[in-house]
Length: 308
Image (tube, rainbow, N blue to C red):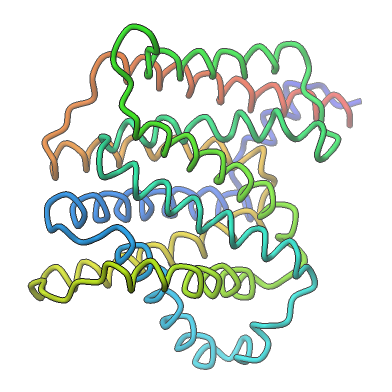
């Protein structure tokens, strides 16, 4: 049996597909940060209705995909409707839409660092749910790391000590939807081409979001606002495509911790765009959550190396 330390070191050495997966994940979360900051700016500063924000985010991605697919020669437009897992694709599409809806709603009231900190809880919950859903049960030490992550959220929210903003419920709902989205993405990653998976999500978002956008649509915005609106689709489309590719190249347990790097770009954008400085409680809580996630990652790799 290989020694755990040497196996763990080898597993953590980014080479080949693993290096590309890590790079793709880092770029993806940076694009997501730009997407969130743009959505917050458009909603709070430019006054664009949230329903219009969400629908244009999906519509622009959808149009770009329809243009890209025939030009790439990888798939035909007809191939985009062919999936080996229609039920799972539908469920993933709904979870992606709900993640966007709840997150955009939360961004209208909360700081960028607050929303991303709550989303940081998602990898821990994914690890917790991997037992009953995928048969990958966590041990005592990994379970304690997950509990520590929940404690980090309590540090950030401080229920009972400060007045909790109702919009935090939107963030928690977005986080729950994202957990389901991540689990399903990993489950079906090898069953359909990434373009098919992305197309299904966008198609559902365009159809489901249209009635809400039409109900509150506004035209009277300057050209710069419309350009920023169009950028939402570009940022979201590129981010999610890279996200799918990353999960195809490496196991979720290895690349998921790199989601935590998003706190850097989110905090930076929050400061430079909105003048928001993370408070001590948010910094402390996010540190606890990140430490819990990193420890959980190390324990998962150590356990896998012992099983070899």
